[in-house]
Image (tube, rainbow, N blue to C red; front, side, top):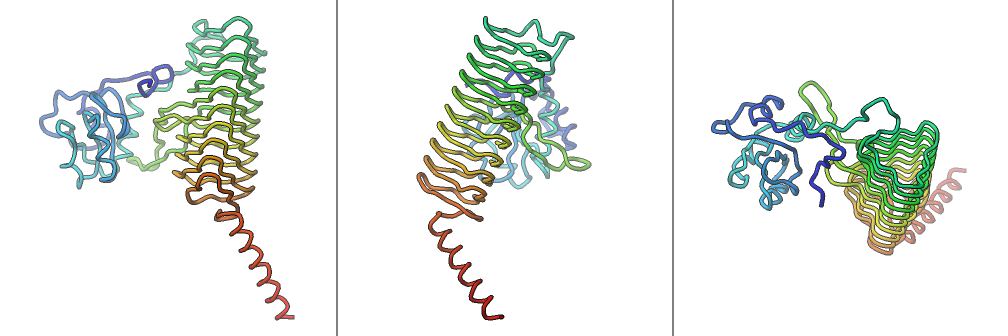
Length: 341
């Protein structure tokens, strides 16, 4: 697995001394840490030497022990429970401190130079670029891929062979397989919606992950797939996504799924293989949708959905139960109406 954040997409600005990191976060510098240096941020499950992480509750502490970070932002109540050798950085808002450190240590790579197609980009034979296409340094496009007018492909992006990419598409921080179709106006790799409290108001939490589209994926016009907050957002093989769908950060979509227009999938949702979503379905964050599950149009999912089940309504529930409840409500409303005549 590629080390995160991926150096193809993010430039390292470190290392920074632990003292500098404490100054950024606005906290006192711990005694005896003058020689501690930080070169990256990490989440609790993906740490190791040189990293600074954050935890907000005891539930995340266990993950730190597998590969302890050099330092960790955390509430004062947890300061004595870190793995040996991990420097405690006590902060009232650990995620906010992490966000400030992340912004200082990792800078998204920008398109450099005056040429629309960077001389450092790698295009295989048979690639066709429409007028106005921009390709950043280090990007790679496979043979037989066609890119429509005014599409922007950011630094480090990799696109496979025999893909069809429409006009006015924006692709950044992404790895794309073969035979992928992306329709006009789609946006891949913009930062997911991460916000926390900063020293003088709300701040964005840097989004340091990627988007991965596997072979055969179709992405509709105007659809948006956000890059992960730290891990990747992944769309599985042969999944078909309609127009105006939003896939948020850290979402994992399985293979051979069908997602109809205007569906919204909130962050860190896991969707199994062969799932189907009707138009305007909405999925709350951190849920699991089992293999082969089906969500009816405009269904609002607030709980995990078992494999193979069909749910509908708001809040969504098994479809037969929902239909019985709708029928009962309709009958009850009819009785009440006649009683008032």
